[in-house]
Amino acid sequence: MRSIKLAILGLGTVGAGTVKLLQENLTEIKRRTGCDIEITHVGTRRDRPDLNLEGVKQSSDLLEIVRQPDVDIVIEVIGGIDFAEELMVEAIKHGKHIVTANKALIAEKGNELFALADKAGVFIAYEAAVAGGIPIIKVMRESLAANQIERLAGIINGTGNFILSEMQSGASFETALAQAQELGYAEADPTFDVQGIDAAHKLTILASIAFGIPLQFDKVFCEGIDIIQQADVEYARELGFSIKHLGLAIRQTGQEQNKIELRVHPTLIPTHRLITHVSGVKNAVMVKSDALGNSMYYGAGAGAGPTASAIVADVMDLVRALANPGAANQLVPHLAFQPDQISELPIADISEVISAYYLRLTTIDELGVLTRVTRILSDHGINIESIIQKRTQNNQAVPIIITTQRVLESKIDAAIRALESLEAVNTPIVRLRIEELN
Image 1 (cartoon, one colour):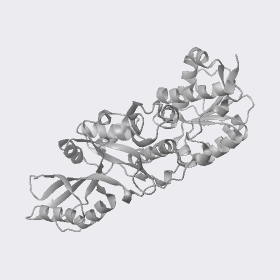
Image 2 (image 1 turned 30 degrees about the vertical axis):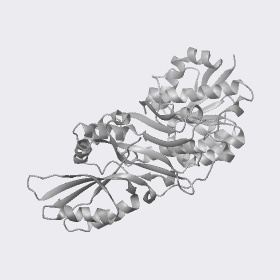
Image 3 (image 1 turned 60 degrees about the vertical axis):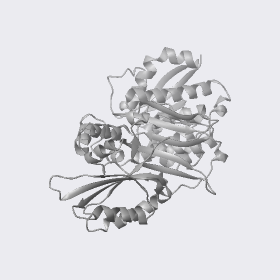
Image 4 (image 1 turned 180 degrees about the horizontal axis):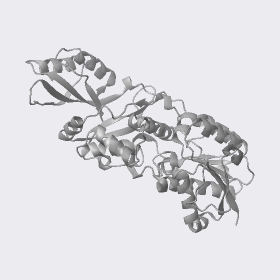
């Protein structure tokens, strides 16, 4: 039985979880792969007496580890971009296959890294980079390979989903964020989660696999959840919606040239859609494709066990390829499409998106305000779906909540500018997008 040798770079939560999973399920892994799998090196700056690392070489010199002859597969779980990229380039130069959970690195540097790996005849596997233990990348690269994918809609950041779930139960944004930090779901600096950057990294990867386009993180429209107040959650519920922080990748059709929408933002979704019931730190991805139709993939989006599950599954794929000469050439290409078939489809600007909208205005209480508001919307070609006008205790600030029918985003932008120029509108207008997800 051939022995495949692994190096694990990083022994944080995910790295330690990977060590434990490989050791605890080793018999099952051998039965499935037909190979022995041995951890020969770990890269760490501190001792881990809680892990069984007897016989494993430990070093803080990660670059030296990836050069070692007794390493077939490098598992990179240190995070970050610059040094992780340097490690991967060095590993590729030395003919090592790579497994990573590093979504930021793949989203921002993946095009170059995949090209290097293809040239060197090695493979970079990255299932764990998106949605933790949910095998969404394998599903799209393999199970849906015969489908043309029309749309992705995903709750792909557990921290943001936890915050919105708590707000659904009555908490303010600030309280829900503090609770997420206390439970370890959010970092002390929660910017990546709250502003949608983490979700944008993941959406970049999913969209490339779905549509056969280059990784283009810099073209994702990104809007955070910190604009949402508890009142918006309540008004949305009254209107029959839940608010979720969605990553959306949509193929625009019916035009001379197809465009792809890449956007991350808070979204009102009808409460009867299954994805609105995904709560807490769970993730879910809805895929709409021509042959299968709608499907949804749900599970734990982070954590030691779920992420290690995805990492070890990738390791097992590479082990099978290494154990069978020539099998590496049969691996599905990095972005699911043959490298020479990756297409430079244009990415739609957010102003070109068509959506329905939720608008919350706060106005002074005077005669004719609602008439002026509706006239401005009509003048901009925007059809109103519903209006709620709320009275407050002092009648000084009157919230008006409007939902519109589907319209071009540039028209909503122009209408908001006109509305905010009214003297009666005394605070910035909150604008959220509505998606039916049919």
